[in-house]
Image (cartoon, rainbow, N blue to C red; front, side):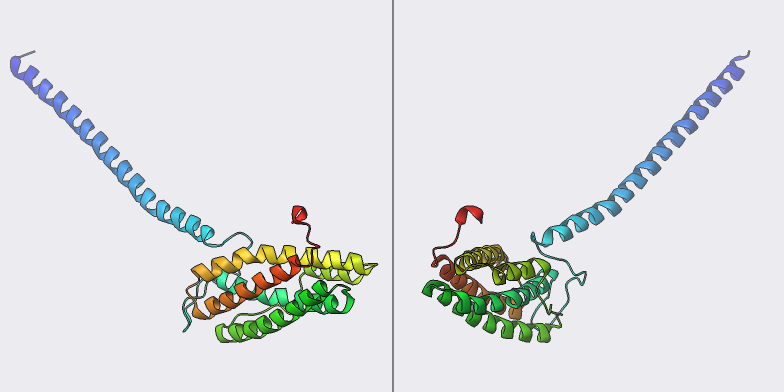
Length: 222
């Protein structure tokens, strides 16, 4: 083979290697760009999903309505759930208070019953006003657990057993809702919901106090 032929062969081989290398680099760049694009799409979706789930405190039901704008500020699923829970509390605690006044034999139980009546009569009125202003639907009857508590109290075979159930059921329920009231009061950006939470906080704490004053609360069972 002549010198010129050898030089041509070398140049041809180098060109082939250069083209192959360019294709490899180009493919790598395309794959890398696709990976970056996919990550850019998926990461925000992942972050949004996790942050949305983290917004709702434990025990709060998401009605699927999202956050809506009102003249009193944003209204979140937590806000709406809180308003409904205040209404729901009154649906069983008002009749519980009446039973306390009627069936209670001690002055402490009768006093607690009157506080329940007074507090939830006020909260019920306030809740109706807030719900109407914000367009929040409200429950009209106690849930199954609350109705079960009412049934147990009404069927208690003695005044002593009634008073024990009365103090325990109501103190337990108020303790559970107390944390939600405080969280909504601290975090809600809706002025009407904050106002309701402020008043509910005072009333719930009052009810916890008078129920404990009966001397019938079993703290180990709470």
